[in-house]
Image (cartoon, rainbow, N blue to C red; front, side):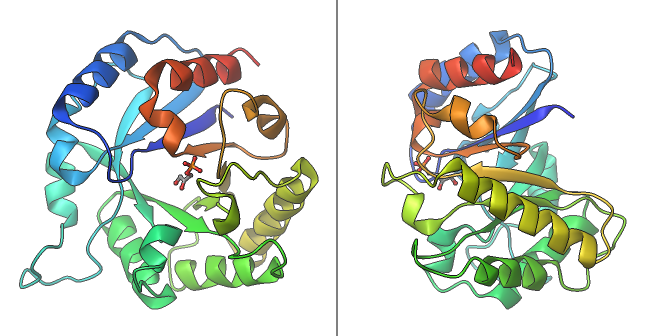
Length: 236
Ligand code: 13P
């Protein structure tokens, strides 16, 4: 299965920066890697992607089927901009008050409209029990069709933007627990990504673990380093 690399640009960037990124990404040649770029909504139209290995994603979606919803973004708007993937339940949104129930609504809105949710889960503190993460997985997927292949991004909150990385054994343990959980819930298959403080110096040890790809934050803005990581993984 091709590895998946997702860039979450968060609330960063500018038209100028994204023009540079898109130019370089459109020239990038990869054999067996899928790349997903998730800019802020207002920059989606800057991402005229001409590379078959690269898809467009975004960082959130509405949880309501209701047009009277100031500030929200609907699935049909995203589809009009060729968005395929949506990051859902990122810890930085959970911190703003997003609850499992709303995350589940967002996952369902994605799936009902042909969008693929990238569901973020992760423990707050290193000392937290890993089983709390499985509860997040279960809640996010509640009442979703079993013939889908969920994409789960394991992002320990304590590892996001801190330079602290879990041991590979912990990532493997969590990845296995998530896969077992997904199977127990009745889904055939799933994709498990890891995110949190990945950079050009540590990606190799992480990608050697049992995960299917990476969700990158800060490093995705440094396009040359991002490309170095993509090529390093593609050549594995
Ligand atoms: P960093 O790679 O900056 O730690 O962020 C990870 C992340 O939150 C991706 O969604």
